[in-house]
Length: 311
Image (cartoon, rainbow, N blue to C red):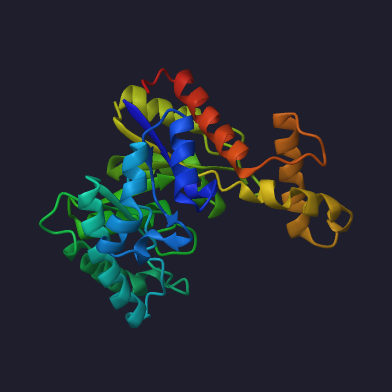
């Protein structure tokens, strides 16, 4: 059975607004990242119990995973690493309080292309994170974020095999692979044996995010393999990253006359027009973040129905 979760801070940082959206969609789970203007990793257990959990309990909202920024630092920044170890200790306590199994992590900004040279230190520091979950059933999920060591499918597998620990697994994000220049379907087949968790985010050929099903994510193909052939039973977490369409569409439309001079603007303008056509939107018509999140939710439901998934 598939359980739909989401980064509801893409609708609002306000926790109550996030919880209301969860319930409006008829869901139970969220993946916390920013709560009331503060990153989840900046809460102590005591602060979380006092400031966050009462609202979650009131709405009956649970955590599918914790969307932490752990590992999203420079590899050589030892001070930041030590600070993150302390934050991870608190996140483990929060995770256990919420009866949540997963914490999302990253494999560091390495600052160059000599990946073989970085590998020993990356694995050493990831193992340091793992020490913080020993004695629990919590699994650290490595996400293939852009511009980190593990932004490429083969390096993700390399990390998994080198660490060789049941409390270290992979999170698959099709859009991030596309933005790094990799084919999403090929990447899926490379990492699928090591993945426990999936972020739902799509990306166009211009490497700009679009509502799920509109991009190069090959969602129908890999969802069919994952669910029908491999019997996946777990979470799909919505992460639209299309807030720019809600927040900046009119600005990019106004700047379209200089797209010939600034390719960046031209790229975004083309993607916004593509979304307009798909969603029946006028050139100057805008929508809010809540609407875009609902597009993502409905798009995922449609894809799951196409492959016969039980939700």
